[in-house]
Image 1 (cartoon, rainbow, N blue to C red):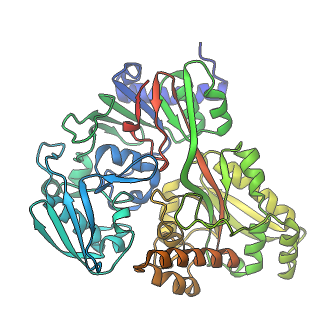
Image 2 (cartoon, rainbow, N blue to C red):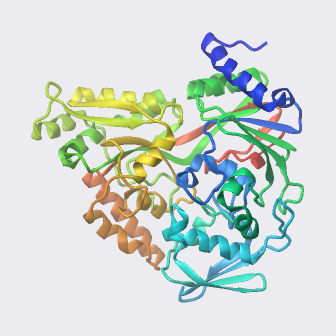
Image 3 (tube, one colour):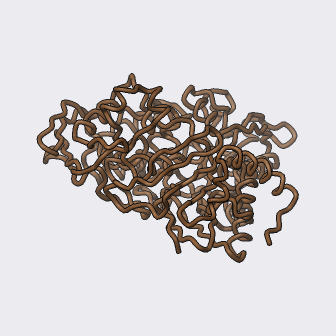
Length: 512
């Protein structure tokens, strides 16, 4: 018998009613062995995985990877593998790139995937007019040529991470003929990909139902039907899995994970992922331009206490935007917890617990386990040294909107995903002024980062990024907090392969 507390019952009631109404009984069929229901933590704003703010939301990639295929594949341990490209590389002087397109692949509408689709997708991604958030990566190639199944291109601007990006955000191939026929609006109404699952039905903010692609070129999914139920509230996701209305869920509070994973009929896995929790600092208001204030805010945070107590040991404190496992991770960069030093720094600028510096900090609530509670704890630590921060809660979509317009509050919590582990996609995009994903924008940092984008000597490139990370720590331009472990709870009748990218892909769930 399932026992739920009152709050969980209320949370489940609305979700179950809505699901029954929209799914027409699909909840009941979730018990069937050919249907997998995932209580998911975010909604799906768009079906286009290559343009708009949602394209760079790491959390949505699990859905995109189910529907579409990427140029380059990626295994759960972050290693790369053939995808829709079977081979790829550069010529000796890195003035040309080449790619071999997989043969025999068909789109969901039955038409063949061709090298022309690859070229069209790359050209579209590199065109600033299309709205790809990282078009400056894709725009580094041009003058594409097709010879059989091989695509070649001139390198207009060398980017050492180009082929890594082909397994990462916006690195998806779309069907040229179909997209040009139906347009952006038509594609949203009826998306077509080449991935392991096809869109069957979608109800915005409620659910997405997928059907297995029986003509998929790779390993078939274990389930005929996959349902993503959009359940942003963490308490509601707990209720979904505990009641049996969902087969698997993720990103629930760690104490609930510890409770649920030992319950009869349930199991769990919680492994480190490439996501880190961090606080952006926006250099717009005068308070953040004061280096004493920035360093005091950093020194006053007891990251070890947060990781051990609040996050129950399911997190690793970090001092830079490079987490363990990233290529440029430098364990020698350390920022100790020192509240007395924080007080002394604030005193230099005329602040104290009796006369605190005041600013706002934004955060999500329930997007990541204990995100809001973590910021609450940090604000409490700050208050003791002379920082009075006001918390504002926002949805993750609002964060992207504000960040793109350089309108974040002086500080803003964010969960940064870097599934390819390259420093350019962590420190680089988070801290380089021209990047739409940066909050701190200053010439000193740009002068250090700029030359690294096209550095052809790999050892020199990584050393350069380590120097950037050290400089950022010395200046206090951002506040790295922790590397996360991702809690996943599922029915004991299933087997879930944890994915270090954090993407809970349906193809990584099987019958036990």
